[in-house]
Image (cartoon, rainbow, N blue to C red; front, side, top):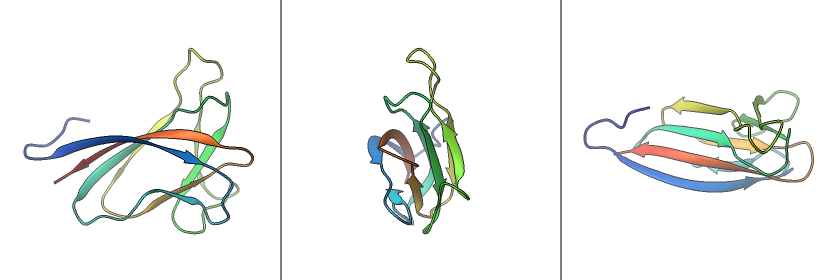
Amino acid sequence: MGASSGSLLTASEVVVDTTVGGKVIVAASTVRRRVTIRNNGDNTGQIVFLGGAGVTVVAGFPLVNGQNPDTPGESYTFEGTGEVRGIVAAGTQAVRLLVEHD
């Protein structure tokens, strides 16, 4: 993902948990172009399920972590401005964000 001319990049981390309906990973924004979310937690094999409000571990988009410390977790890039939430089946898991915005 290359940043477009005139855009800014912001990196951060969010810890996803079992909050019913999903924890907000990235809020809706009228100036965001895209966001890449990477499963970056220490809990090997822990899946973060992504979606909108009401996301569940049954219906969310799975973002798998690496199966050992040397294997990076999966990432997914969302185009657009909508809110993205995440949930895990148990415990917590960190995700890293790279947001491109105006």
